Length: 172
Ligand code: RP5
Image 1 (cartoon, rainbow, N blue to C red):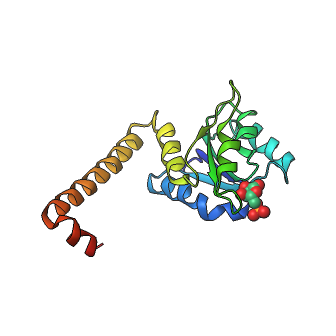
Image 2 (spheres, protein in one colour):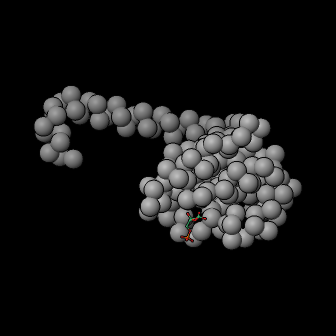
């Protein structure tokens, strides 16, 4: 059994449809992750236990997603030396701007690497990149992912050149 290196937590199960992108990226790069619901406001004790035990349990990075008054990533970051990536989850009332501002405006000394609203995919990639800084094979897998994106865009660019924009749009 491989070691769990990335902890993915979220404030509510309602965040899971967004956070699944982070889980899927870890799976794609072969990085073992654990997934749990930890709420800064509804389960504060669990939050403390999770953050304080993360390093000892062997995690290397934590991804924390939350919406609204999104205190989870910052609170976790305040209690662990591990890097924390915050995912602002889009909300119904304020479109996730509330989540973004709650997560991104950390005071000096307690960083949270904040991705875009609903940017769980990038959070997953970034977590793998952090783990990959000491794992050449993982870095190679990330490089081939980047190369495949480049090839994809080059194909589209060639096709656009051939078809011209109207025909390209018609076949989209
Ligand atoms: C936050 O409150 C969660 O991260 C979630 O995004 C939001 C709403 O939670 P639910 O009311 O859907 O459980 O703590």
